[in-house]
Image 1: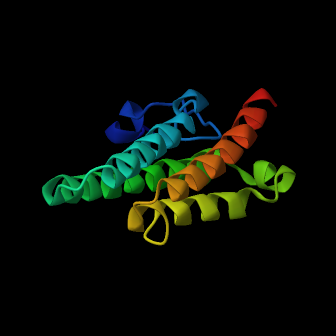
Image 2: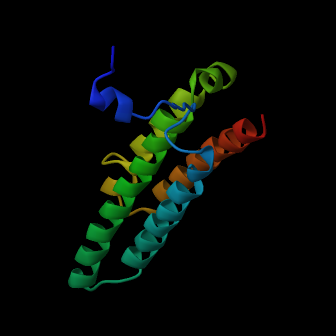
Amino acid sequence: MFKPLFKRLMPQISASAHCDLPCGVYDPAQARIEAESVKAICEKYQANEDPEFRTRALIIKEQRSNLVKEHLWVLWTDYFKPPHFEKYPQLHSLVNEATKLAGASGAKGSADPKVAEELLAKIDEIAKIFWETKQA
């Protein structure tokens, strides 16, 4: 008996991978770049008294803080896999602490450059683990 036309036209080859795209697309540097922007904005905010400048600075800082969280979440949900969490049990709490530092209770809600420095330190810890997993 003949196969229905749609079954004959469907590709017969399938592929699978352990991540959405080749792993080369993931990099904690993206989160770090945005966090560096947050820190620079905090420093400029502190050094300027102009209310319009400060308002714009806060808006941009909040946008950059959201991007930090997005980049960290992509690493956490798409790149890191169960074997990584088994080998690095602190990874869940590191990502949680970093995203909180990028959020409303951290750099997004504060114009203090020290908070942004804490965020950068957490991102560096995550990056260290990330690069160790890439070498494995």
